[in-house]
Image 1 (cartoon, chains in turn purple, brown):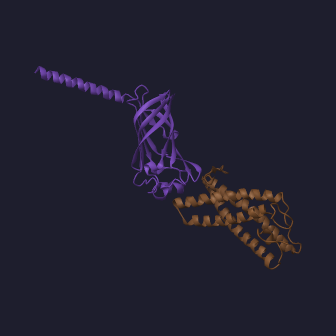
Image 2: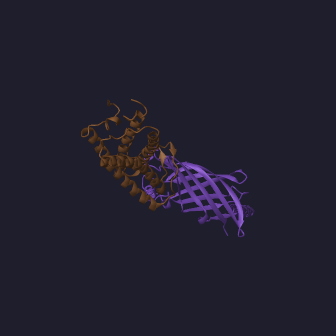
Image 3: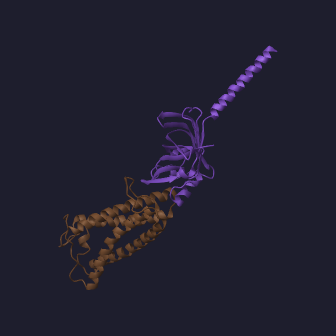
Length: 197
Length: 183
């Protein structure tokens, strides 16, 4: 009887601990993307010419507290088919099976597994990037500037990271060649994130 | 053969520029017609070469015009009839205009389309205009029309040269040929 009582107390204590941990996890404020004032762009080199494109449709799941980076999280999901390379004909080519193959892989996703602080206002998210069904580890440095706009906390997230298109198989057949389309693609982002709630 | 022109014949620089531009224009026609049959990467590659060669022609055209201005021009034979003289001068002027106009309209066309022009992937040229789809379409038509015009004028030029050689039996063709002797 005493033993049973002890067990119940232990279980109760454990439950409370778990609840507290969950509360700590949920404690980081979450932010919603202001899509109208955010850009996700990519720079690429085609036949020696520098070009800019962007992904107009993407979603961001961001929870962040500077004093609780362990519980902070970032996930970016991109609607690849909505891409805009600045040329309709080129967009269609990019959507084809040999390049992004959007019919089979409509989304690309970056999921951070760890966010560390590198300097005042500077961070690095490391995690995995999935494009065209291929997963690769990726580190994304970014800066955060906080502001209060109309009484709400707002974060401006800016950064860029270099990725190699062929790491993800974006370029099959002829497009595997880097003679006319460079392997390196610079991805830049400027996000306006508004505190939820 | 002399480097500079004389009143009797074209010098080696003028001849080299003339024949090099002829070879590059023929290359351009082949690249453009080939590109039209292709798509994807192969088309991209062919058009990139076409643009690089076009910019090369534009640079050579500048050098050529400059060289012409600081050199004597071998005169047309005095025996030419006024209409022949007019035709010769008109044809030459048109060819000079076209070796500038074709690359420039091609360059504007690329800029208007939003595809920057690069010279053999060694350096990127500035965009002449900002992106503008209707302008791109207008330039594409102009570029093509000018290409046909160049073909017609070049044919007239060739026929003229052959007439000088075989009918009039003068030195006009031979003075642009590197290995011909002129008494």
